[in-house]
Structure formats: C-alpha cells, structure tokens
Length: 79
Image (cartoon, helix red, strand yellow):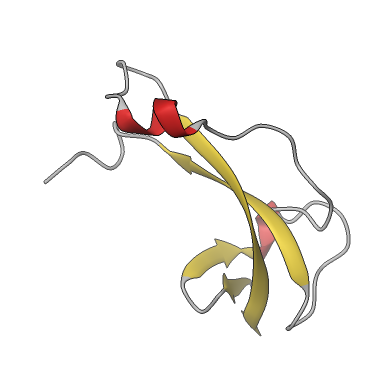
C-alpha cells in the first residue's frame, strides 16, 4: 500500500480467466483509511492491512490511499 499512485493491476479480461499454477492476480485501487490501531489498519472499513506493508509516510485516518492487493490461489483455494 502506498500514499502515492502505484502501477500495475489486472485488466477486466484477466479477472475472469482461471489462474495458472503459481500465478498471482494483483489489483490496484483507491480507498480511505478508516481505522488505525497499533500495527494494523482498515481501508474502507473492510480491507485489513498490516502497517509493515506501508511504503512512504504512514497515513492517518481519513487519508486517501492507493493500494495493491494480491490473490494467491495456492494459499486461498476455492471452497
């Protein structure tokens, strides 16, 4: 997660296809810091993050941020 804009992300077409073995899917989006508590926080009251992943200046509650999420099917298989 960064305070500045990040490059990368997945196209709409790539989000619909199955991932190959070992492949990860990333997506970049914007949100607002809604909670900071010790070493963790929430974006939009829904997305948990560990503050160790912050690059740049630590944000404050109410700050708009750009973040990148990564989905790894080998650690989060379908049910």
